[in-house]
Amino acid sequence: MTFIAVNVIAVPADQGSQLEERFANRAGMVERSEGFEGFELLRPLSGTTDYLVVTRWRSEADFTAWQESQDFRAGHASAKPSHGQATAATANLWTFTVAQEASPRQD
Image 1 (cartoon, one colour):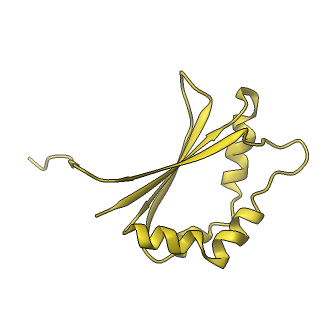
Image 2 (cartoon, helix red, strand yellow; image 1 turned 180 degrees about the horizontal axis):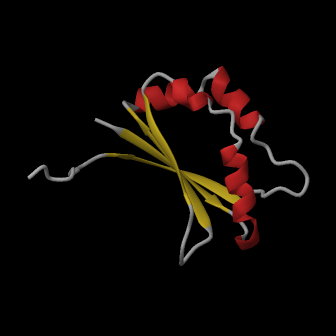
């Protein structure tokens, strides 16, 4: 069953574009991790300034292995903000498994 990790990043309203730029320039090491299925950075449109970083994994064990890997440490070290760049006020990790899903119908 697919495992989904959502990192909720609180970003000051005027620094969202800087956070997006940091993600655009990320190391990209997660893509070659065992069990990795996908990544999305979700920009808030209304009601919050929190960004969501959504990753999909084959299993929770694959996600845990990624978090404990040297690539994870290296990728996150390179993502630290420089002076004047967006800094997350807080970050929280939410985790899920897929309870139900649907795909477009092929009529």
